[in-house]
Length: 448
Ligand code: ADP
Image (cartoon, rainbow, N blue to C red; front, side, top):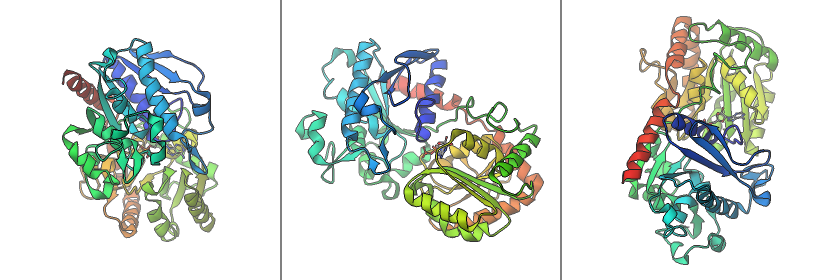
């Protein structure tokens, strides 16, 4: 949860949604592991919202959240089983009797299971319902069968109708089966995960529970992401005053050692370096694309193979390319503010925040039509009036390349490009609407 710990979009969601719900009068107790560097214990952080950190020196005082260079931490099952259990106990200890326990992803998918097993007869949770949000179906929390006893659950639950997944333990699967209601972070993704292509082996399980699924788009935290107030960027600006954006572009070109020229279309990527993000497709077309009069900056962290891929791309195109391998919040803000276009050729994207942030910063998103990207980005050639970006579909990098070339044409038509920027900046992707939708969902669930 932002600002305490972050590896990707879930942190943005966890940081913003509870506060937006708090403003709507929902009382919330957030529970998260006390990862390294998090100072305090329990505290109130906003109206109606408190946070409680679960402390465990061995499990959580580590350099990263889920793993290191060598892969996932081998004791992740113990770590998150402990956490899910401790979170429910913490609610009891705080005498915070929840109407709904809202858990996220495999790390806390055991919450709904524990409520219906270990806590089944606990009067404290008699009326409590559970809700599981899936932020990314590609991460399921899969562990060897021999670790099952760690969960201290009935061995009979290691079955097709429970944890068992091709002979191994699958926490997300159990969560999907046990939660009273389920959600994903965009309507399109809620449909997609029922198919073989996007279900990662759980499509049948999702289909079984399809009537309990809702897709609610994530918002962005406009306190963090706002070009009018952003103190990390060179100049502040708004849709009524886009000159400030030009200053950010020049500052970014300067700091990256690129040619300072407002006329060169400047493309950026801020991303986890993972297969999901469509990086192979970018690599395939990189040489053709970067041989043109364009500039490109990548800020990314993740899989070592992609570190190498992008280092090599940078080495082949040193004049107009800048590659930054690492996680850096400030640089991310400067890229969103300074670039003309943001690339998100993701193979799948449950919601995606990058495209929403870039819209807010007048940086035109170029996306593959999938999941939340399909739900939020309208191609300007398909719909001149409402268009807010450019998009392509299918699995071929050629379509991506053609769309990049299309974007260069759009860029050269100054008036058209301005209109695109402004359409994006004026859209409201704050949490207001989504928080309202979550509140209604909780209320329905609590009454059911
Ligand atoms: P995902 O959750 O799959 O990583 P999202 O688009 O939902 O993708 O969210 C990504 C979030 O993480 C955005 O806020 C983005 O700006 C941020 N981010 C991703 N990579 C980096 C990085 N290398 N440095 C700084 N911020 C990053």
